[in-house]
Image (cartoon, rainbow, N blue to C red; front, side):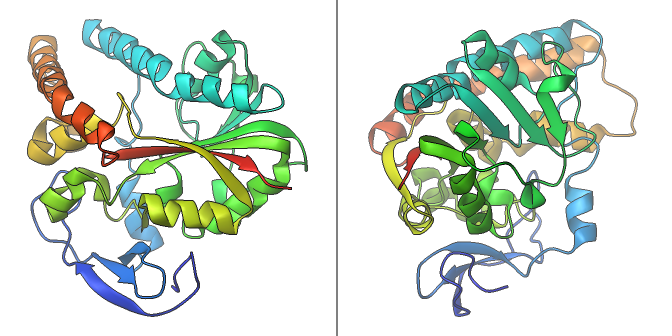
Length: 315
C-alpha cells in the first residue's frame, strides 16, 4: 500500500511489533513513517480475516439488562452530550445550516443528542451495530463507509468521530465529503493524535495505536495537510476531549481494566456478578477522572491524545 496522503512508496521504521490493544505481547504489525510526507501507517496491511476478528462481537458496546448497564448508558450519554454533541453544535455555528450526517455513527447516540440540540441529524455505519434506544431506526442507515455515496451539496455538516484512522484510503472519503457538503459546509474530523505526549512517552504501549484496527495514525501536521489537499480550510482545531483523552492514557497504563478489553476477554465465559462488574467499572472511571489534571495540561499544550478539526469546504 502506498502512502494514502502523498502516494509515495518510501517508508522508514517508526515502531516495530506493536502490541494489539489490551495486550503487551508483540504483534506482527509495525508503524512506519512515510519518508516524503511523514504520515504514519500500520504495515503490513491487515488481512480481511484479521480485521474481521478485530471487529468482533465485543467491539461495539451493547446495552444489557441490569443496573450496571443502565449506569454505563447514562455515563456514555453524558460524555457524548458534553463532547461530540458540543462539537457538532459548534460546527453548526460555522455552517450554513443544521443538516448533519454522522459517518461511523455506531449506535446512533450522537444522532439522538444532536437532534435534541436542534440539528437535523442522520448517520451511517456498518450493518449489525446495535441501536441506541432514543435513535429512530429511520435516522440511521447501514453500509460500507468507504463505498458510501450521497447527493452533491446535500449536507451542512458531516462528522467523522474516531473514523479516519480506520480507513484504507481516507483522502478518497474526504474528497467525496467535499462534494456532499453545501458551499460553506463544515467537516468535523476527530482522530487520535500520534504526536501527543502520551504517544511519545508510551510508544508501543499507547492504546490509541490500536493495531490492526487503526490503519493510519494522524498528527496535527498530517491531518491539516490531508484537509488542505482535499480542498478544505481549517477553521479551528480543538485538543480537549472528555470522552477520549483520559481513557487513552488509562487504557495504556492499565489495559485490563478497559471496558472493551474486558468484554473481549470475557466473551463466551460466564458473566461476572453485577457487584464485581460494578466494582471494576467504578474503579476504572475513578482512575480515568484522577488523570483529568494531566489531560487538561496536555490539551492546553496542544499535545493531547485526541484532536478535533473543524474544516470548511473551500470553493
